[in-house]
Image 1 (cartoon, helix red, strand yellow):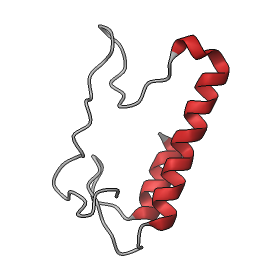
Image 2 (cartoon, one colour):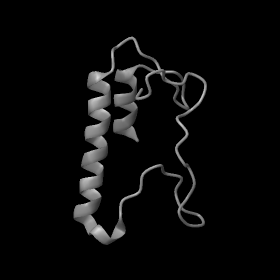
Image 3 (cartoon, helix red, strand yellow):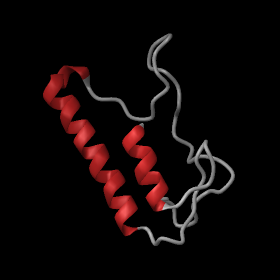
Amino acid sequence: LGPRTPPLDGEVPYRWVPERQGGPHNAVFADRAAGPAGLLATLEASGALLASMARTTPPGVRSYHGFGISDPEGFAAMGVLE
């Protein structure tokens, strides 16, 4: 939803590889040295980014997701689950 022209045929090209062998394939990692408070701050910041994107993107905008093209409301719902 973020790019001016959201992709409809693939994801935004974030690096999607594990930081360690067998690790999760996440795009955003929290700094372990920051401890639980840092993890919560990262989670809160990510949630705020998602909420801001969903709130400010016009309802007619569609963008690609692995489960299909979605609107801002759908991305907000998927973000809660993810």
